[in-house]
Image 1 (cartoon, rainbow, N blue to C red):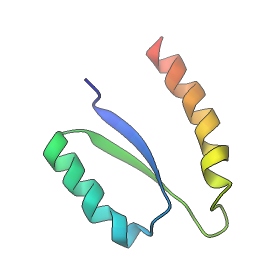
Image 2: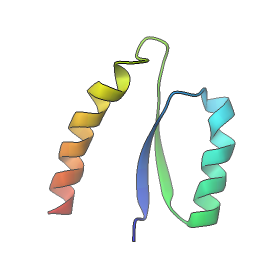
Image 3: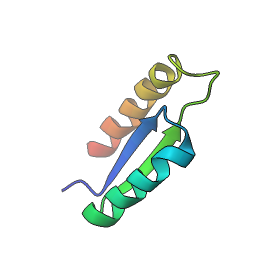
Image 4: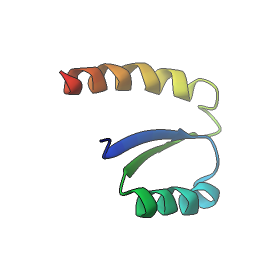
Length: 61
């Protein structure tokens, strides 16, 4: 079972925090959030995702 996820969120923190907190409480799954900034929108997910995937793959071994 998954006990933690990482979510890259482009919505402002003030708008997404309630939904993410509710998800954590209802599922017991911890959500680690990376918020997009105006400067990184569009490129932030790509630059974040590849290194994260490498780390996650290493942890799964």
